[in-house]
Picture (cartoon, rainbow, N blue to C red):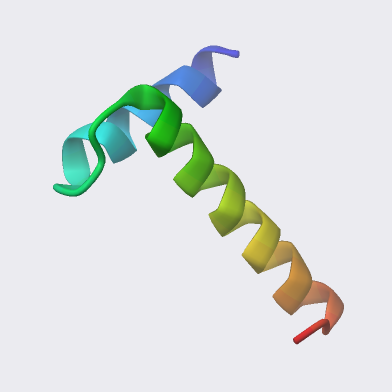
Length: 43
């Protein structure tokens, strides 16, 4: 849980277009989903 929050805070501060922690968490979730699809071979 700590690592997840740290990752959210990092994205929140690094990306200019992200306005809140919820959006940062959504960006992370989509990134992980995309990475998983690429690993599995779904395009």
